Image (cartoon, rainbow, N blue to C red):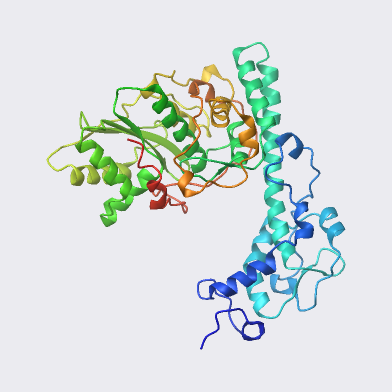
Length: 458
């Protein structure tokens, strides 16, 4: 009879292969315990609810760019680790990101082979450290990255304040600075997907490329603006998962709950226009609209002079429309949704959201000449509820439960014309992508669970 609890003699030093897909859950749980940071050392990682102002003053370890001088398999030892490592962890740079990935991939097999410690060959001829140090290094690497992102954001704010000290934009910048300075640096923000962190807001203050989470944040802000507007128009702003659902339907006839919901709303006369974001060409955000009353659909692209229309998506969209609404002929229109012309390489997500906000709310179309702060208005909107209670942002230290997803805070509706950022500054982009309509690379697919959170949109 196979054991249902971890017995070391059955797994360690027995010549077994560590295969994540095949090992029992109780073995995975034992490995997780092995990698858990001891309570005595947890304080070395800054708490997520620490205000940004204090977070920026922390002196963190550096991250090395050097590679380890030995093979990864030689970074593990069967000798026990030494106990007193606090000074070691706080004074030494952590290994490079590449080294950390290699160690993470190898630690499971090393454990099965009988290893009891990690050898840091950069010091003392292979200083022996507990397996949990790997978890510390990985978490600290993320903290270091996010601290630098926040530093870049505030450097950007300082530059923009100097350029805009006598303009209306100066007031917007001051508001953003006041809100963000009192915000927790890495706490959870409740939303339709329920998985965004305050640290992601730093990308709105600067010229970082927008990830799927950032687009979701902006979509939710527009959706809440639509709710507050009390408009008589029957309009929906679809989440990112809509395009993935269209892809699934065209290939597998998978009519997801979200698609069924929209179909029902159209048939009952409760939905006339559906706006949606779309990720294409492996690095570009655009948007589109379906007009169910006029039976038309179109996509708009702020770089339409550079990119061709999203042919694959439009073909799949037409398949869904033809199948779901038999007898109705929908006509594809050529980029008829009014939008700005992008002059940079990173603001496509902002332009796409501005096209939607212009169509629904009449917000002014973005033009490069207006300049202004990158996405400070959106950052303000995402971090200010109607009560503008910053304390709530400080205390968000855990993701909301599934039952709380629909109980989202109501945000102030931003003037999206202020989201343009023509100022160039070297800044890394978050390459988490969303959707299947790309030409290169691997994308993050959104699950049907995401769509279940949004069935109250109509």
